Image (cartoon, rainbow, N blue to C red; front, side, top):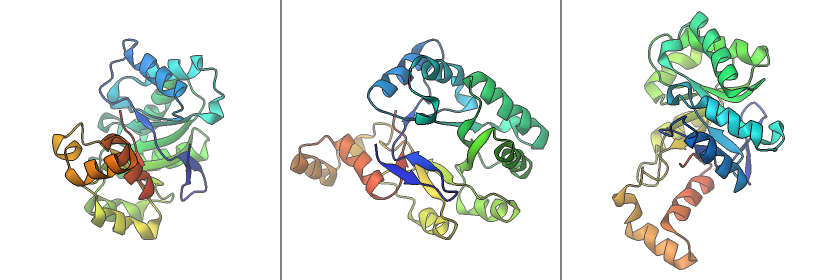
Length: 228
C-alpha cells in the first residue's frame, strides 16, 4: 500500500475504505473485516454514520496490530462547541474501543466550528487523536476558520472525482499543505463517470476496469480516495 506524508509528519495510506450508509447490525463489521483481509489499512467512519462500534469490533477481531490500521472518524454537528466536542471525542473513542483515533474531522462547516476545533486540538495534545482535519469545508469556510487554528488541518475531505476535480480548492490548500481526501471518488456509481469515453479507453488500453482507472487518477493526483 502506498503511503502519503501529511503536514504534521504523520503517514496515511493512499487509499481507504469508507463505511457511509453501512448499517451497524453486523454488516459494517463484516464489511470492514473483509476490507482488512484484502489489504485496506485506512478505515473511514463518522459519528453520524452510527457504525463506529462495528468498525471497532472488526479491528479488534482482525489480529492486525493496532498501529498498522489507520482509523478515521468525524465529529457531527450535534457535538459542536467546545464542551460538546470534548464529549463527542470520548464517545467516538468508546464506540470504536480504541485508545486513540488516527484522524478526526469536523464533519461539516456549520455552527460553532471554532469551539469544536479547539476541543480537537486539545484531543491531539492529550494523545486521544493523532491528527485532525475537516470535511466539506470550501474556501469560504476555510477563510473563516484557518486564522483561528493553532494546529492546521492535515486533511479536507470533499467530494472529488475526474469529472469534479475541485481544482480551485486544491490550489487554495497548497500553501497550507492540506491534503484533499475524496468522498464519492467513484461518483456514487455515476453512469456519466463510468461511461466516460476517455476513461473507458484508458481502461481498455491498460486492461483495467474504469473504477480502477478512476481510483488511480486520485492517487496520481495526490488525492486520497475513500471508496465504498
